[in-house]
Image (cartoon, rainbow, N blue to C red; front, side, top):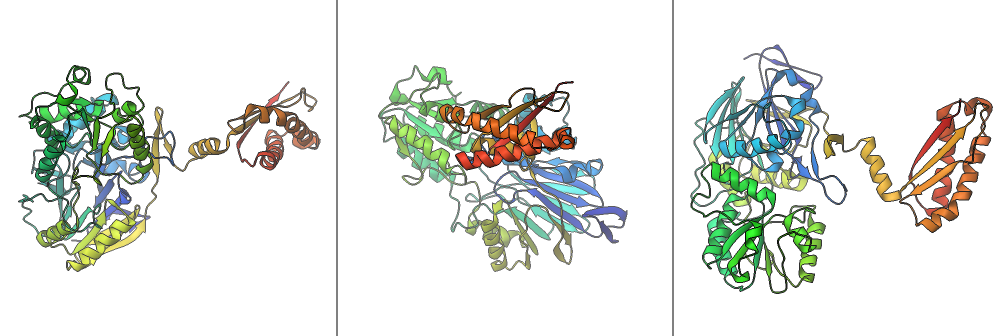
Amino acid sequence: MNNLHYQSGVPSADGDLGALYFVSLGGAGEIGMNLNLYGYDGDWLILDCGVTFGDDSQPGLEVVMPDPAFIVERRDRLLGIVATHAHEDHIGAIPYLWTQLRCPVWATPFTASLLRAKLIEAGLADKVTINVVPMSGRFTVGPFDLELITLTHSIPEPNAVALRTPVGMVLHTGDWKLDPDPLIGSASDEAAAMIGDSTNALRHGTSGSEADLRRSLIDLVGRYDARVAVGCFASNVARLETIAKAAAAHDREVALVGRSLWRIDKAARENGYLADLPRFLTEDEAGYIPRDKIVLICTGSQGEPRAALTRIAREDHPNIVLETGDVVIFSSRIIPGNEKAINRLQNALVRLGVEIVTEEDHFVHVSGHPARDELVRMYQMVRPRIAIPVHGEARHLIAHAQLAQECQVQQPLVIQNGDMVRLTPSGAAIIDEVPVGRLASDGKGLLPLGGAALKDRRRVILNGSAVATLVVDRQGCLAAPPAISLLGMVEETAASAALPFLRDAAKRAFDDLPAGPRRDDNAVRDAVRRVLRRLINERFGKRPLIEIHLVRIS
């Protein structure tokens, strides 16, 4: 083995090999939008390419993802994307970013089915090569020898990836948990490093068993003689089966309410899951079933504005109505950042006379991520020399690293997005930082989250906007008084009262300019904008986005 040269924040293919490089562009220091890079001998491989979802701090933005600029610059050496499983925070960005990445994808059958459906919607189905890998499959991508290790999670076919190179093996866990008597898989090599899930690193004990939850939900559904609706993550196929079994135990039929649930149902049945369940009813069919004989599985447990539960709570769903005496069971955890939206949804349901049941009231949910006891068991099985926590906020990563140290891991390493980690047989080190950022899906394109367009939009939302139009004749004089509009700032009566004052101020600002600057469009705009900004702030206490339209008559 020779030395790998490192120049300008990227390993160079010039010279010989000496290290494996790991970079997280998303998912280290946050929960969601995972995008991990492995670099070796100048070649790069992506593990997962996911999204997160906008919250109240990002109005109008529903989907957010990592900025892939670093790897796009190296696209000629990008070998592909390997998806560990089908959750949105692991594959959701592929349809948005693929036109920049233009590489093949490797995935197991269920994940491939869901991804293919997404690509059809994006008009990319005939362009993206999806290589379907069997469960526990082993395959080679360039210099990377990859083996999928089947674990347990809240979606079918979750995989850890044993990534082998001449300098050693890394176990990238993906998202996982341990149910009783798990089959971890058999990686014959000892892992030099483990890079893994930190979501529940602060939780003691274990994540809980879906089998125990099934017994709890059977008991809970049996307490009611009215309509029962269950909000859960659509991708949790095991939960769909658990709810269906709980309904059947009380002679109830089950309907799916929400488009994403039907997509999951289709992908699951295509790949042999839910095979022993009768077909689910449609929401239209559910209307003909007596209240005490139906269970509705609904999207929207996180308070998403366009999802089924929110529309039902607003009483604008076309087919489903909940009324006094009905119950909604929230069989999911609260994703950080969604607290306000979920509270609004639950309050709206309560106002309809609906009873709410959450994990605070009853055993209604088990996590798909490992708690501390499960992390300890994983470290006991894998025994890595290096631990790099990902998939968590800073507090989760630090807690995970401390736990790894307690498990006798020689080198726990806490990183953040953009840190380039050099992995060698002798250890790991952060050697540089690469650019990172976020993109938001907006209309038919992507916008940088910190870019001018979204900053201006946020400013308009918080402070409104003002538009001033100046018409200048060929002598350099105003041909008419300035026209000014105030939008989204104050009520119309207050705006109308201020307009004459603002028009006069804009005219004075223009008239006070010397002849030379009057011929300079930018000088005119700056002078008028400064005056309007100061006066609007003095009068209304607002700092709006101010646009100056300058029209010159030739």
